[in-house]
Length: 339
Ligand code: DAH
Image (cartoon, rainbow, N blue to C red; front, side, top):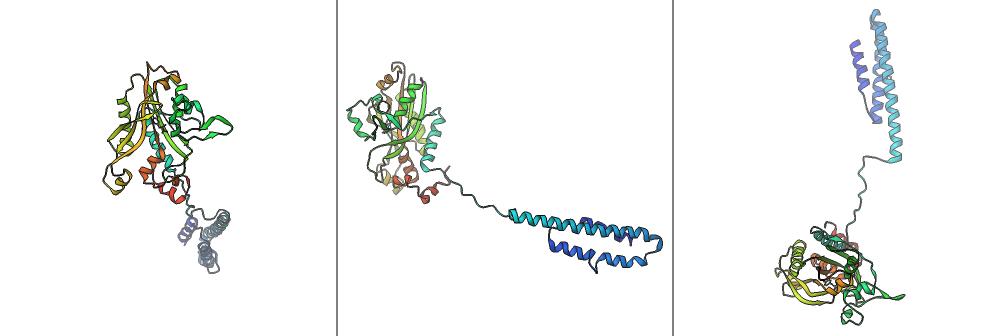
C-alpha cells in the first residue's frame, strides 16, 4: 500500500502540462469525487493500526502535492493565455520581409569600380554643378572650340560660368589639382547633356572616368589596362583601339571590344561587325597637365571614359535607356539575383 502511495506522489511531482484539458483530467483523476485520493481515504480503515499514522501522512502529502500541482499549472496556463492575448503566438512564422535590390546602374558602376580597385585605382568624385574651367577650358576646350558642340550643355541661369557637367572628365581636373603623381583613380558620376530623349540617349546619364599619371606611362600601359578591364568585365579578350579625337588627350582613341557573332543578338548589337564601341581614351594632353601644374616633361599618363548605361544595356540586353529612370518595379526586380 505505502509503496503505491509513494509511486503516486512521484507521478504527481513529475506531471507537467500546459493544456487546460489535461490539467483538468489530472485534477479529476486525483482529487475528483471518484478520484484516487477518495479511494485511498476509503481504504484507510483497512490499514493496520500501527501503520495508520505513517499511511495518513503519506496520503496527506499526496493530496497537498496534487492540489499544489493543479494550482500552479492552472496559474501558468492563465499567464500564458494573457501573454498570448498580448503578443499572439510567438511560435508563428514571421511576416516575410521584402528585401530591396540595387539598381542596374549601381550594379554596373560597382563592378567597374571593383575591377579597377584591384589594380590600385582609388575612387574619386566631383560636383555635378561645375564651372567652365573644370568642364571645358582646363581640359583644353577653350571658348569657341568646335568640340564644345559635341556636348550640348545645360548652363545655370543664375551664373553663366556655371553648368551641369557634361562628362566626368571634370573630376580628373579636380583630382590632379589636389593630388600629386602617381595618380590612379576612377571617377563615377552623373552627367547632363541637352539632348533629346530617345531609346538610345537621355539628357541625364552616368559615366566612369579613369586617370593614371606617373613617370614613363605609355600607350602600351593604357592598352594593357583596358584589356584587363574588358576581360574582367565582359569576359572578352580582344580589343582594338581606333584613332579618334578628344581635346584632352593626344593621341586619342576609341575602344572597341570584339563581342563575337555567335547569336542573333550579337549580330543586332554589333550591326553585323562583331565589334562594339565601349569607351574613349588617350594619353593626357600635355596642356591639361600644365593647367594643373603637373610637369609634362616629367610625367605622362592616360585617361579613359565610358558610359555606364551603355554597358548595362549591353550586359543585360536592355532595349531602351529610359527604362533605367522610370522606376518600374517589374523592371527593377529583375536584378534581384545580381550581386
Ligand atoms: N569625356 C568623354 C565623353 O564624355 C569621354 C572620354 C574620352 C574621357 C576620352 C576620357 C578620354 O578621359 O580620354 O565623351
